[in-house]
Length: 173
Image 1 (cartoon, one colour):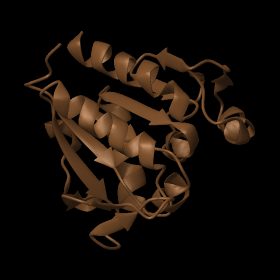
Image 2 (cartoon, helix red, strand yellow; image 1 turned 120 degrees about the vertical axis):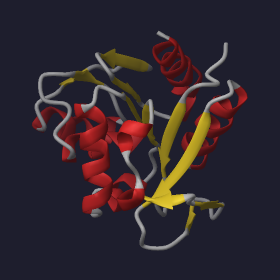
Image 3 (cartoon, rainbow, N blue to C red; image 1 turned 135 degrees about the horizontal axis):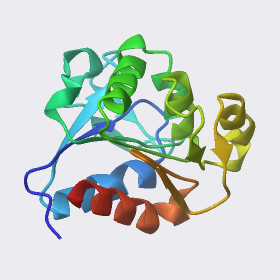
């Protein structure tokens, strides 16, 4: 499995879920993909729910999304912070409109809703945001991973193996 020619954006903000950021980060690097960590621009280093820092390579406002093949949104409470950044929401919206792989896990679905990408799509996410996803026009499925077109979603850290497998398979297609 190799993704040597693929470039991926991985979003970060304070209170990200450690596993949902670092597992895809290292899994994609392992496949040869180039992963760029993109923050809101509020600062350059962000702390996870458990205090582990992640340094942004650049800010959302500096990214030309069409230079990339995919975008990943980790969960935790970071997506609530991310959706307050117009540049981050616009980056997700443009990734979806360009039919790039857009993957969100746990509370990451909040960003998909804010970017207007899930109307009439099948998605999953952490059960606490089920109503938010439905109210954004999505059909909610309680499954470890759901792919609808270019949108890939999962519910929680225990779904990470299936989530990353689906991302990698979709990027290889």
